[in-house]
Length: 172
Image 1 (tube, rainbow, N blue to C red):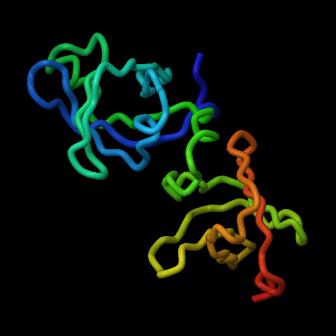
Image 2: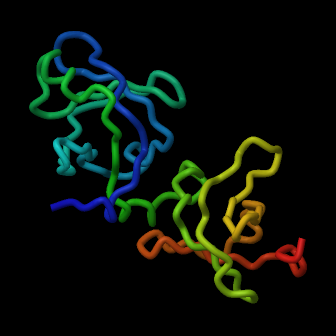
């Protein structure tokens, strides 16, 4: 049985496309196109169910059309409207980390190689020129820049990001 700890979201089913079970979808990571992934996962009545990919094609850099095995009618496709699409986390090791939607890292623990555990990332702020990890600290919050130069390691299974931050950054 597939558990929530084993998967990460990559998109959402939008609506049926045509009458033969094809679906339009939006995605934030095209990991299923860069890796040999036989199925995508969706939650049906509280259970994470694999849906085997029959065919798909991209329409834009964030939308596409997909057909799953055994989904052959508009009615069957309509039952999947609005569902989140997941893939197994094991495929993350094969994908460059910058291809992952940054919001995925909310909930990860940030650890500095010198200062130790900094805290748990509550959100990723992409509203400024520099993307920031937001870490609550009491009544305040730490804003840590997201930069490849600082990130040493990402452990997707343990949800830990190890960084080597510039001296004095945590004192600001």
